[in-house]
Length: 243
Image 1 (cartoon, helix red, strand yellow):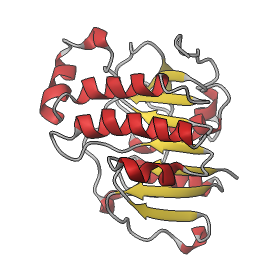
Image 2: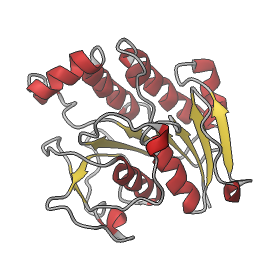
Image 3: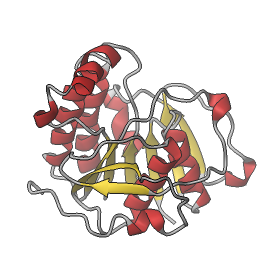
């Protein structure tokens, strides 16, 4: 049993990460700007909800304290918030994790953040229409995590997920599909949020994801995933050159 904090635990992906970690028997601290709907009573004693904003730097040490791992699944809530959330807050969380000696930090980023894709149309759209300089800020957030001197980090770059689902559309248990993993920001595709969550949860428990950055999309053709799939696809990752 491990202790994990999920920052953005109320979000479209964060909710699945929280639930999957709880189902695996871990202790989970879910952090979000708003208070989520009550979780099933069977998790009593292993589930803590904290209402906090990841942009509140003074609150961060207490949010990550005594955790075995921290997941940054928060996202910008407005068009102008990308710098505050995807870069500044990520940087401050990485520093807080280092100060609190948190063994592991997992950051959810995005495909197409790399500088080589700066003039790709979809990146331009995401960087301007979705949130101001969203992709640039995600890239700076990644760099801040790599440079923080953490014991271990993992940066997960998912494919397109679409708009976050409403709280009423959360379905459990989900039906998982196989995913494809790559490095170098060269693959394209989409991924379901619960499959991304399963990939993140497997990454937190894997010895193959220390100090790595990788992309993940749904495998084609679509295939049902068994319980070992998400751990298996992480076996051949390479450590980041800067690690």
